[in-house]
Length: 121
Image 1 (tube, rainbow, N blue to C red):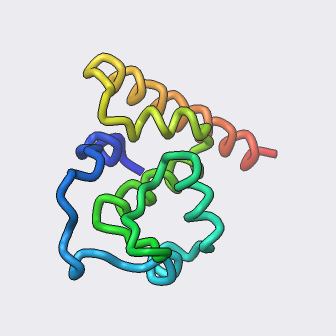
Image 2: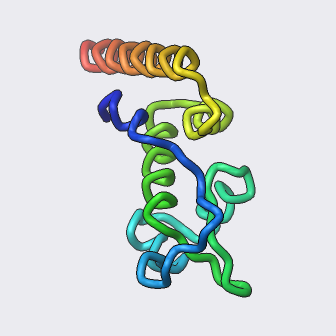
């Protein structure tokens, strides 16, 4: 994971609906990320992931895929859901974003130190 992965734009869905060609269903999204429907619904219920709706069907666009990748990477690094939500928020100021990047760097250093200790043990 690189710091820049979290700074590549976090805009939410625009008011206009994307074309059908850009959307994938929940089954393809789950297969793409090797996850479950339940996991996708969970992050949607927490407001971290947004799906377009076509009746009862959930449809995901490129922005949803990018956001879900960041959610999974953030969780793998040990970030809480509220920290991830803040990272995904388009309302973060430049100072808040820099603080988040610093927090991520600290978290990476902490995990690297833990790994070193485990390797030595």
